Length: 73
Image (cartoon, rainbow, N blue to C red; front, top):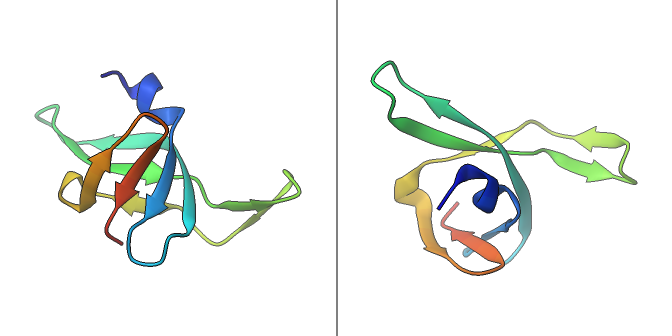
């Protein structure tokens, strides 16, 4: 699976069912390993952003489905 494939999926919290957003970036260490995924901040009316970016480690990912990524945050 490519990063572009992951960026098309919504990220949803398993704890409360809310949509967190979509993946916009990844953080990579000096050895080329992915440290975490960066989730876009919430947007209102496609113009205004609310809050800061959220990060998700691979340990927090519970399931990657066809349309969503379920995370434990």
